[in-house]
Image (cartoon, rainbow over all chains, first blue to last red; front, side):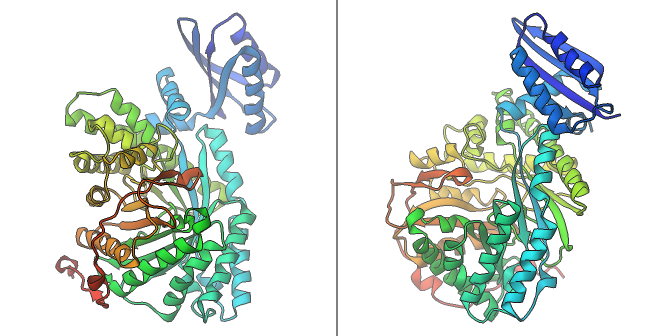
Length: 90
Length: 454
């Protein structure tokens, strides 16, 4: 399993999750977990995904998510999960 | 499973608080390149660096992208060139040829600095050491990316005052040789007492002779992260403040540890150390002086600053040491004036003086760093500043350094501009009373009594 954490920050509106999830489905990326909060009109979301079935490089995944982000007006970033384990767990 | 709060804490650190990995530095031993023929030596040096570090920049960028934390600099440090070039170089000009080779190699692999144009003369100078030191003004003027460092003293050996005096002249000559660019050559020249062999930060990085053939050392950063964490505990006790710095330093250093292990794996080169220094940049919010302000000082340099810096340095070490399997280098808080916009501002309004900075170097990780001084300061006075700083390092068994920039043609209050990470600052006044009779005595200062531990 190749776990990646995807972070989404932006102004909430209809269709953000649908667009992001479609991108993952089209690229054979399995969503393991979704968490989100909305504060006033802003959405903070994290998705933990498994990129084992994804054929491209990390670079192309980041670019793809960037394009999706532009489409829905949010900032979307992907990071290997390990960095959070390292920083926040002893 | 990661928590929303943790993910967004990291997100904030990177996007708003300038969290980054400051440098991945590959240390390369050039001892096996030694050759009595200068051309052959240069070819071997070029080939070894461009082979071993061929993928350094690419790997650094890849790791940065995948973990979402930028790696600002990729750099190389090499064995002190006075040792490597001793057999081949007869005159200072021969060493300049090696400097040019290092510069070409750095450009070829795309690193922004290469360190190790160095000599270790804390007890005495060989002919090669002297030639290298005398070549520094020309070497730094005709290269772009080469950094030079000279070790002038240590707790074990005392201080080589002949070399200190010589370096006073060399700093001035280097400033003269690069006067068209605000004497920027001096920004690439640092003198040390007790230098570490595994420092990944420039301009003082060199690959010590006791090191392996090739290692990866990583320097972290994160003054902005510490400052933001402290802003949440305003008015709380020292205990709370110290715990906050410690926890933050732990998180920042963990990033460095992860990156060091990953770079080491991908490059097939052993992991050396993580240097857990808090290194500022001229970017707003990426400042040690801002941390000092957040701790309660009106400006960095106000009474209380030395105590605040002592706390910061100690807590950074305490948090960082647990976060990494091997800690080394300088590991503490840097206080470069031009590279820290709030520090430069404190100096400009007169809150921060050279004398206060000297006191601060007793408790921080390095020394008088990136300080622009008037271009007409005599070489003997610069040698006196160096001697003071070396004495602090020698007696306190710590690393100290001097990187002052006499800006030729400019005086107190004028602006010196270096650009990029080196920043810019107002030129600071220097005590006008002389010390020529002291620094001209010649010889060595004996090692202090507490160095005799055997």
